Length: 190
Image (cartoon, rainbow, N blue to C red; front, side):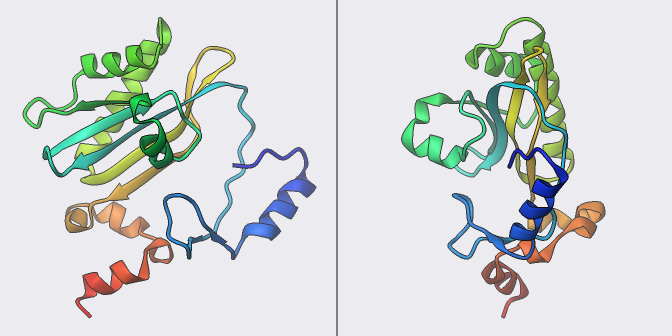
């Protein structure tokens, strides 16, 4: 994310990044191509949080993770300060439960209406994760505005490639330019 103050700043930023490769903690040294830039109105941020989920292969469950360290790469937080990541596992029989969202909210130090808002976001993400056969979903940052509301500022989805046959709408949105060429080659069997 980049905060800009004029249309000229937007143009300069876009000209600098479009067609280039973005290297982050989550990419390899080649990075990912920048094909689009989204411009949004600025949000008055009070605090940044993280909320995400992955399939934990060892427990065979969907695990939600939340942290007060939003806005940064969660992998870096996991490596350097793992105690700042709070986790709950979804039971495959009952699915997500509101109490799990509240539990994470309390661990993040949220109170009052923020607990309700967080629980609603948690339940929505969990439903999307399960219904869409995802391998990853994350909101980073999930912000508390200075007005006292939760807003999802940036998100990321990762579909389970083995389940795409059940998700034709996700398959249509697939952007192969964002895929690792080695993984694409492995999938094709060549």
